[in-house]
Amino acid sequence: MNSKPNVTLATAFFFMVSILDLIGIFADNEWLKTTFKPLILLSLIALYLFVSLKKNKWYLLALIFSFGGDVFLLFDAQSYFMLGLGSFLLAHLFYITLVSKQLKKPNNKEWLLSFVIFFGFLIGLLMVLKGHLGAFKIPVVVYGLVISSFGALCFINNLQQKDKASTVLLIGALLFMLSDSLLAVNKFYRSIEILNLLVMLTYIAAQYLIFRAVVLAEKT
Image (cartoon, rainbow, N blue to C red; front, top):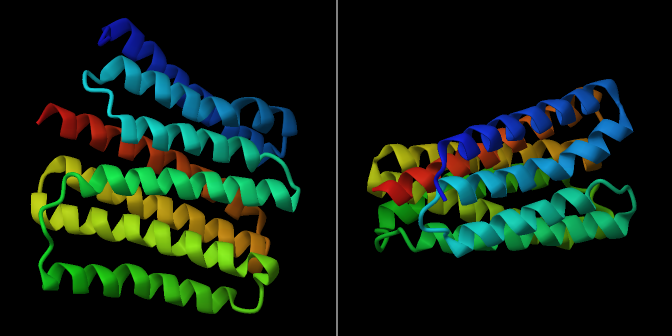
C-alpha cells in the first residue's frame, strides 16, 4: 500500500522516535530510551510496508531481527548482550542474502580490494580490542566477520552497479560498521559517554540509508 499520507506519517514517526531516543541517550533518561528505541525499527518496518510494492522478504527479516537486537540490548545482563549480538548477526546474514542476489560474479580484483579494505579494518579493530574481550572473544570475532562480509559485498555491488541505490547501500553499510565498531570500543576497550550517542546516531542513519537503498533498487 503506497498511500502518500501513510508514508508521510510513518516517515515523521520514524524521525520523531529516533530523535526522542537520541535525546534520551543524551539526557541519560531511561524512560525515553526504553520507550522509543524499540519503536525506531517498528516504524521503519511500517514505512517500508507502506512504500514498497515488492515487500522483499530478506529485507523484512533483517529489519525484524534488528528490532530484536535493539530490544535485547536495552538490558545490561551479559546474556541479553549475547542475544542482541546473535539477533543482529542473523539480521546481517539476511542483509548479505539481499545484496548477494543483486551481485554479478565478482572478479579477482573486486574480491581482493574488498577483502583488503573491510577485513583489514576488522583485523585492526580486533587488535585494539585484544585482551579486552574476555568470554566475548569468539562471538565478537564471528559477528565481525559477518558484518565485514556485508560491507565487502556492498562495496563490490557498488563497483558493479555504479548507481544511486548501490552507493546509498554502501554508505549505510559503512555507517553500520562504524556504529558497531564504536559500540565495541565503548563496551570492551574504554567507556566514553559521548560514544553512546554516536553509536545510536550512526545506527539510525545506517538503517534509514539501507531502507532508502532497498526502495531505490526496487524501483529500477
